[in-house]
Image 1: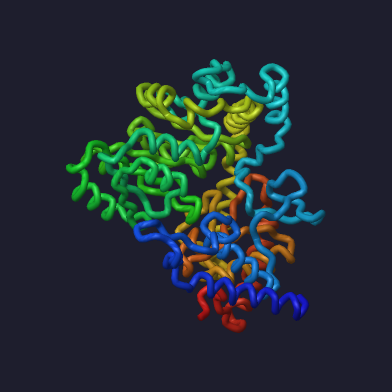
Image 2 (image 1 turned 60 degrees about the horizontal axis):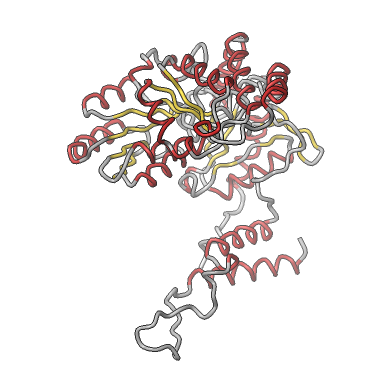
Length: 455
């Protein structure tokens, strides 16, 4: 980077620090009459480039310019991204894909999507409630219900929107939501939308969940306990049997988000209940996504028939949103069918997870709480190191996106490795060798001071 550019970036950082530290009192207009509202003279509250959120973005960009490190986010891929991907015309081993079963690009999945386009078109053009049903939607809902061992299911166009809309619709200000502190943002947003009392407990702390229910349940109309089936940040799982006992004791609903666990856990890919040999009907609300193992997009809820009937009739994300695109629904259906037929995919995925976990630990790398099922973090310790390590690995031929503050605590920044059926043991060992080479050098180098917090 040229001295001119580096100086310009540093000036941006200094300027933005000043903006973020300056008093935010309303600027008084000396000419206004008594009792009239006062306004800021600079008009920054109506200019998007004057908002504090935009100033923070400028800091992040300037930090990257000064350090010479490109952002690890929004990397432009040239085509399909699975176990390998092309970025800027360069083939890389890719550990940042949720295509766990390697079905995105499977010929049968593509053929099913093309047939659906020919028969239904690319869109159903309206909500299922007002525009009418298509058989492919009913087939998908029935397949998802059978997959989870429940009476019924209903699919939505967005996985994130599923949690937001369903939690927001089922609970209100008179209710209580208790969950794990590291659940997905969509759960947090749904809880906030509901207006319910929200208690999020330390990760994996069943005693804290029980205490929250014991002290608060009696004062609320409804209560929801919500966890993930396989945690996307940590790669660990909850104790489902213990959670079922808790929800029964305190007359609460139990919701399990299986975004990362369906198609991953269980001998047949049926998720956490199969993995832990629990009756799936003991869980009130199963949530899942179609965008990971099932090579499509969207989300769904599976549960008892009355629950699904309520959601089909009242949930804003279903009632007021278009139905799933037919080729998307068809792709998901085909992927589930292939998973059932080609059971070796599930076995290979778990084998890859065990290989990665054991090999990482053998090299002295910290894999946190992961059980070695598709999601395995390597704990780095701080965000700057995680970003630098991601870039160094990219140069060595590996694409791994870091998880940084505020997505995780600053001292828990990590690289998240997402494993697929298509990864080879050679690719796994090669990337772990690279991490084991680079991480000690990074930690033994000169200390990195955060430009955002430096005064």
